[in-house]
Image 1 (cartoon, rainbow, N blue to C red):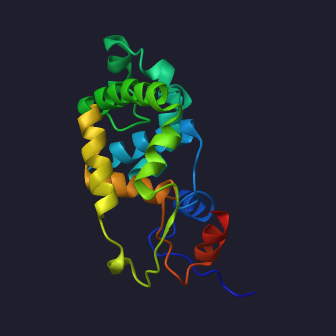
Image 2: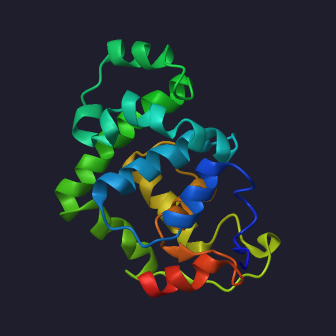
Length: 192
């Protein structure tokens, strides 16, 4: 049996491998999942992605399975509950940012019909097909993530710097950053 060749970043963490092999880079158009990725990528700020993947189920439980309408209504009582929840990153600014981002997310849905229709405009509705051979070639930011960050910040979003926006774009399949020799590269290209 020939071994599978994948991007090196998941390492040997099974949750990271499953995420890489089934979700990362697949073009995503479901508003709730897009909101989940915005929350998780914002939570990652200053941390390793593995930390967030390991706490992903905790986030789902703590944040009503990423239901933006419920999260947008959270009060200070919910913030205190979340500050005591070891299943998530207990960082007050990130928790408050998630609540604020849920409110802004709903505003975008109201204004644009869907978050999906709004966010994909930054890549003209298409996945940018990169052809990187090594992780060192993969950028931390691009002109598209710069534009997304600037507009989301103007809208009032928190934890949406250009690096976070680029990570979101990778997760949501707005860019295909699987390395060309990864078994997922062609599969994700065909998924578009």
